[in-house]
Figure 1: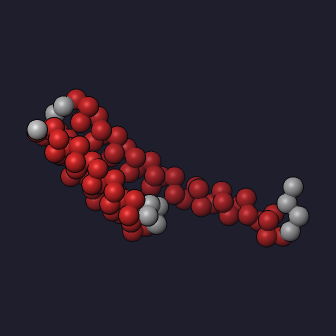
Figure 2 (figure 1 turned 135 degrees about the vertical axis):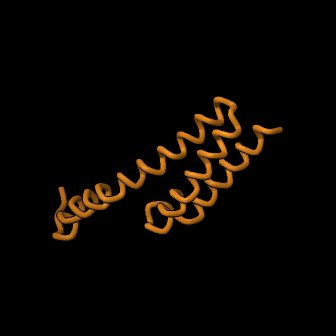
Length: 88
């Protein structure tokens, strides 16, 4: 059990932070899932369209602080490479 005052307040702060970021996380995870489903189906046109919609959402999450900027860039880069590999 928490002994100090700050330790007693910490669960409330943690809960508030988790509550405020969860809709944003769900939003960009949904966009990533759509891209991955399009890649799995093998449809390059659909995958490119889904990627074009997902990229701004990932960058928006990075600017809001939900994702680190490098993490967002890495995810976009890896998705781009996977979409490009569909044509090869």
